Image 1 (cartoon, rainbow, N blue to C red):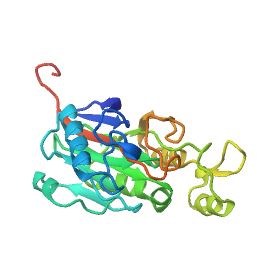
Image 2 (image 1 turned 135 degrees about the horizontal axis):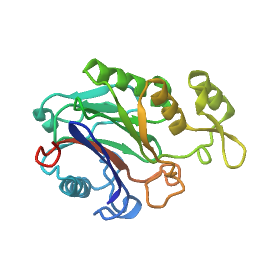
Image 3 (image 1 turned 30 degrees about the vertical axis):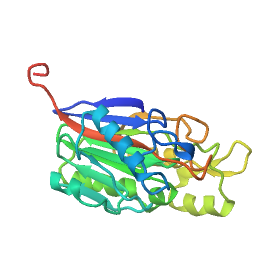
Image 4 (image 1 turned 30 degrees about the horizontal axis):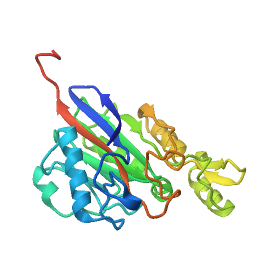
Length: 252
């Protein structure tokens, strides 16, 4: 169920977790811990997987926020817990300063980025595929965080498809590289490719964000993760970030 966990310390600790594809209720192409409702899986099984994840993370109830991701740049800002009970909005990033709410970003080759300024208590999660990265979803989200008062932002970059496996046409590589030159790469067979996660890391660096962890696990190469490039009919794993108040008796 959980692949890895990280902590970004501050006045309010930010917790980050990434799931894998094991330990859930889904079957077949979605076996077994699929968290996406839009891929053709049984909705009741997806709901059971999401509930199990919330329980494991200590966010049970309706305290996991999912969005309908469309490879755009819209940021969903959660200002009140009542917004969690509304239908998912179309967005490719989420942010909040509320404690105990998990911001979930689903992926199956795209790059999940978790951001936090734990001192001011502002966190965000970003879904950055080729289109969103090139369109500026990363700097756009950082700008929204800073507008809300964030200062020293830290990042955790989760697993995504690597440039060895992200083969594209020469025309597409040129098109993306004209926007973000660091994205241009070469596949394992020497053909044109893209390094979306590497481009994301460069965008974070330019924005003055500290990268605490940068996963180089490739989703296409790892059978523990869902990958659209490996199997087009597949599920989605997730990156989740949430705030937790420090215990003043143990953290003076």
